[in-house]
Image 1 (cartoon, rainbow, N blue to C red):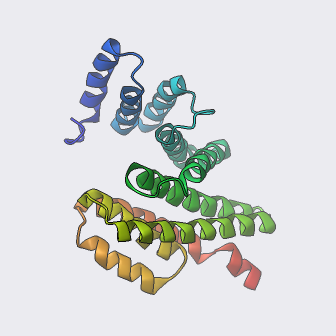
Image 2: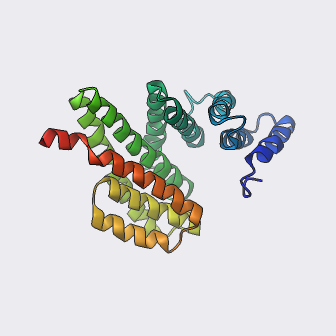
Length: 234
């Protein structure tokens, strides 16, 4: 059902499975994913229902990177719908915890995917918050967020280069490492390196993967046009 993107059916099946295995955290995580991706009866309601389900795993105090990634994603999407700053802050906090827990622990396999996912989302949302701070006239805070995001992007490039040397096993892993490098280089406004990793990523991409990456790159482009540093230079 998930492969066919029938998330409503996936949700129903997972609810049945959880009835038989109510303490299976993996099934809870999968139900959260299916619930919010179903967008039923509407996207906002689905996200709020998914949050309610995820709360059973105590995301506010959890050290599980999967739980933190989901908590960050749900609040990020709610921020995009509602523009409620509390959702943006909650998302940044979740991604930050997930990212710093795993950096330097084991930069490969499952850990690598979580570092990349949490790190690239954290960097992007720090830029979003920087733009809001600048608009509010809080220039020091805006620059602080912007610089922190750049440091994270440079660290992600280092982690991904190391992963490429070790050789990711699956095509999916290889694509997301390359896509992270592409996005990180773009976020650092290094056009030459971004073009290099784009070329490599396109060799192993699927259409759906590429569409997701392109959407995020458009967001980066929009944010960087009026970065806090440009205001400082002016």
